[in-house]
Image (cartoon, rainbow, N blue to C red):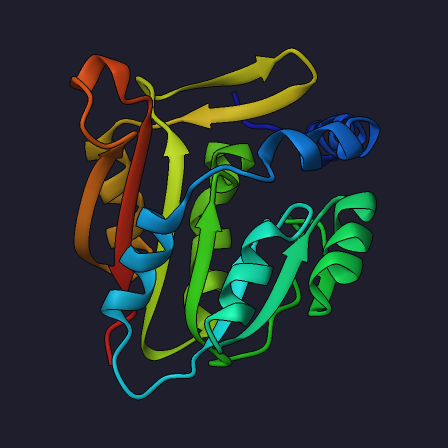
Length: 209
């Protein structure tokens, strides 16, 4: 059933309201998460000479903005949560944009890479093709998109106060391919565990030149 504008507004308001309410605890609980495998996967595929312009899409409290900056890159954050955006600015010193993921206003062909770690699954399936095309448009030709999401069997709905859409590999590949991306690699996380203990699907995509 097609979601109405009111449905989408409720999804956004409720999910962001949850993150705003738990922002401090979320920052502390995720501060030491090791996503170096994901950062390396993004950077390894970017062509040209570093430093790179990186958009941390769904940057949360700014942990990974700090990592990109320490590595010498120019990182910009974007998050829908007002509290996360404020934390990210304070903690990283980077420019951070607060934007509703369903009402994005992104510069054209600005970034060498987009890091979308544990975020795109919050976008309703019917809106995802449009959002992916907006992300593609924000990449320079040849630029790279990284995404990691909890995988599923193509179901979507509420998980407590957070909305999510959970794609399998085939569905995710179709969505990204139809949005104009070319797959570079995919893998499951955490590394080194049996597949049934790897709930995260990570993938890397290029905007063709």
